Image 1 (cartoon, rainbow, N blue to C red):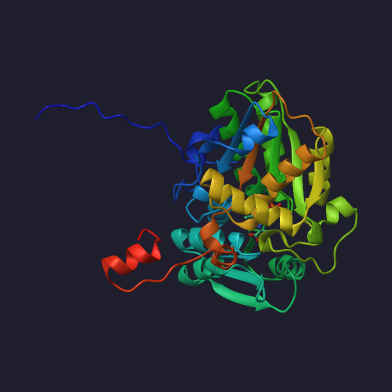
Image 2: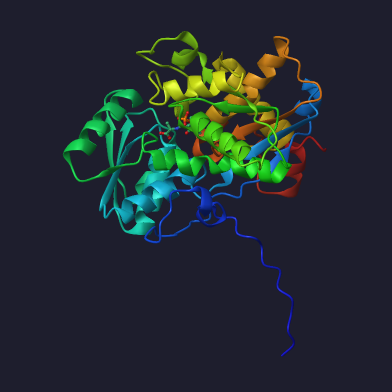
Length: 359
Ligand code: F0G
């Protein structure tokens, strides 16, 4: 037998790759579904238009359940197992529940998910169903659901895996580590959608940790974006009835509000609102010009950057990274709402040629 050189990739999985910076013990189960190691894809059109030195999209949509939640969930559920939990619970606008359901199955735990009735994207509900979670549709908002699960977790033997669980934030900070490792340093600007504000908190923690360890020479300005109809941090007051097409970030009273404000202020950044029209325009452009199919909440980061440029922010010579938090396939209803011409044809060559306008 001839021996062949096998190229082993360096490990992508965050618990192994960044284990030295995570709260892992020798009892933490190192189970992975392949989370992390997501690509930074360079912009081909929006970068030029904004006059940036470089614009990258970090495709967190390529995580195993299609969103960034998997980074935090792999750790939160591993720690729940370590603590001998038998069940986990979360409130969710959809992605957290999909991720919790998947990682719970992998570890043999029960998952209970509480979602606002009729307000989560179809693909996300489908994920919770197929992974066998127990699903409660609550006649209320995400904020109501979060209040309920926080109370439940104090009364029943279930581990709470919303981002108020610090293991979620710890896992998600690895997204910042990867950006620095891929680019060689932090970018000048990090654009991120803000809902419950866990992810902006996590990224800032990750960039700050790498800076302290001198693995990064700079930290980015954190630019967070909320939907205009669900912009409590921008308004400075909770929103009782949040409304936006970006259902993932339809949140009126974020749990990590204070930490998001600290990330903004410590980084010299900003948290601003973008309208649903701006979100949908960025969503459409990302898919049609950049080949990035994301969900509307993810497009808020790009919509925000475009708006900052329009309002006069000087981006020249700077590198920006936009976090693409979730996969477009999760929300087919929004995609199908884009005006499109779909042609019909009989099942023969001539008919298809006619439909295409070629004869
Ligand atoms: N983008 C997507 C696709 C999300 O699902 C979320 C949050 C965010 C952005 C905002 O992140 O909450 O850390 O500020 N989704 C949560 C959920 C609330 O239940 O899936 P955040």
